[in-house]
Every structure is written in structure tokens, then in C-alpha cells.
Length: 276
View 1 (cartoon, rainbow, N blue to C red):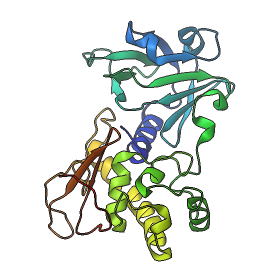
View 2 (view 1 turned 120 degrees about the vertical axis):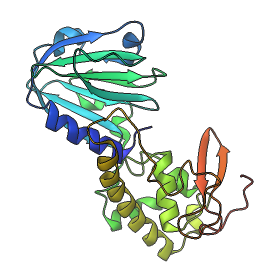
View 3 (view 1 turned 180 degrees about the vertical axis):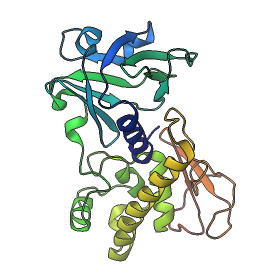
View 4 (view 1 turned 30 degrees about the vertical axis):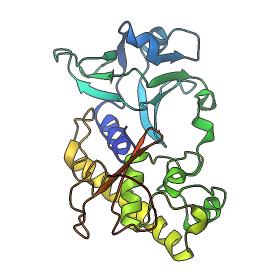
């Protein structure tokens, strides 16, 4: 699932490549296109967007926000697990499970690809109408230390689960939660109430540093191939059995509640959990 670092790169690339251009055509490809598109204007998705100039692309949490010359329109994209955007030319072969194609006046296209058709694209006159959008907490890279510490008190559960809750901070998912907790040397299944003041401060610093470093690494690894997800640079996520970059012990894995968690038992002590 694309998280804050990947979506920052997507935002930057789209602003560089297609912002300021006019949408000359919108093609919703059956059958999947009808599943992922949500027209909250009720005026027709293709008809409403055709002829609009893309003013800017923004990001909020794990949502992309496309703004247009008609300021009353916004396209909110929630890629979820397998949704991806691809830059292409009309001559490029369509990737499997391509559901939507936007053609631009500059001659290029932006395609929406989704293997499991789990993502949604909301064309809306009001951001608050997009499901889950209004529930998000502060941006993970913008929240102050004081606000982070205060908000954390409202979430007594396991610290990894807290990091991935959009109501706490926006933009962090399963993969980067693993990386942040590894950097902070905190076990993912520790309860918030068990963390010391020093550990909470360390967690905040690790969140800021890990996400900023990841943005740079994603830019370098993916460039303008925004449909790809290259996370080879990660320290522990999906590195089960490999040596920990810090201590050399094998990375552990726990698969629980439909979520795979990787961590180092030596560097991140504090849990008696069965796993690999």
C-alpha cells in the first residue's frame, strides 16, 4: 500500500508532469472502472472532468487531492492496497487491471491501475464528503512534539496500531510503522501506557527522520515510474530472516489480524509474541 513517502513522490511528479494541462479525455474502462469511480457531483464523471485544467496535486494522509480550474471540483484518490497511478503515452500498452485513463493536452496520460479494485476515486464538490477524509489527524510530518505527546495519551493500545490509525496521525501505514519502530528501538506490540517519556520522545524523532529519509529514497528509487513500489531500502519491513542492519540478529515476523509485522527482537525488546 502506498504510504506518505510514496504519495509525496507521486504528488511531486504529477505536479511536474501534468499540472497546468487540460484533461482532453476521460475513459472509464469496464468492468473495474465503474467499481472504483465515485461521482459525488452526480453530473457525470467523464463529462464533468473533460475540459478541466488540473491546477495542482496535493496530498493529505494517504489521499491524493487533484484540484481543477473549476474550484468547486476536487478529485480525491484513495489508492488503498493495490491502487497505483501510471504516467503513460497513448501508444503504451495498458497494464493489466487498468480501470481509468485521463488524457492531457500535453499528449500524455495518467492511468489508474488496481489489481484488486479496492481503491476509490471521488469526484466531489466538498472534501468532507469523501469517506474517512474528515477523520484524519494531523500530518505525520507536520505535527509538533507537544501535540504528538498530547494526542498519544488518547490512544492506550499497542503502539504500532496507534501509529497506523489515521485519527492519530495521517500518512503512516503498516510498512513505515515497522520502520519507525525499528528506528526508535521500540517493540511494535508494546502498549502506549508502558512507554517512558524518553521512549515517546525517541518515537517522535524516529517518525520524523524515517519518513523524511524514506521520501528521499523513494524519489531516488522510483523517479517518475510512480506506479512502481520499490522498498528495497527498508531496514526491517518484509525482511523476515534477514540480518538486522543494526545488530545482525535475524528479523522476526508476526502475522496477526491480517497484518504482517517485522521487527528485531534484539533491538526492540519487550514482547513475548510467537513468530518467526
